[in-house]
Image (tube, rainbow, N blue to C red):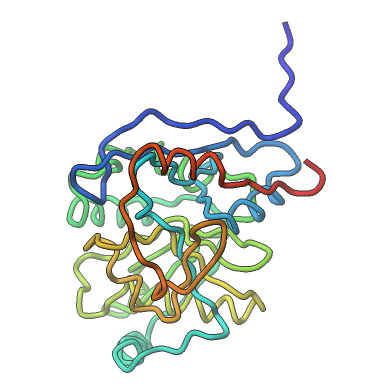
Length: 268
């Protein structure tokens, strides 16, 4: 029996599981698969509506009693580095940026494992092997790139950080980033965001999408240092400084979740 793929994206909701950001909370995600010739247009459209990509899946939070997770982005034209961020740029003047196709390498995987083992030893990626890593990098049917950063060490060029990104029609989406955990003085996490903003300007793109910002989560505090930060909430992008987080009861939140529209590309 032959099975045909549906013409329109099908959306599903995951089962509840412990929230990785806030204690005493559970998370659920709304997700759909990326497939076929319309994948790039779908990724562009849903990224503007708070969705994120993981391999060939697009997802966004769909929690029944919490609205803390919000997709965040920087407006490239409006962003101006702070004094501390300018110092970070000066520290890293020796770094060389290289833009490559989404192909996994041994040096990337070695850096990834060191990063995970030191920074996130109990996280969901801690048990990823080389095949899992390769799938994360290479399983994409949209316009993805690997942005690598090199520094000279003892006369040799060394990979010290990299990010997997999607090139959208209005910005750069930072899917996943890794940096050398032994170079704390460089502040590479912040440096990469600043440089991705520079790359967006070079490509005439308006935004850098940073993933989710969770107000009240110490893991996410660094994102609010990039001003003006915009977040997607209540079906619109607004300045993060205007967000007032409220805990809603389950019944009202469920009604709101069901009422949030999803806009698909015109040819879906």
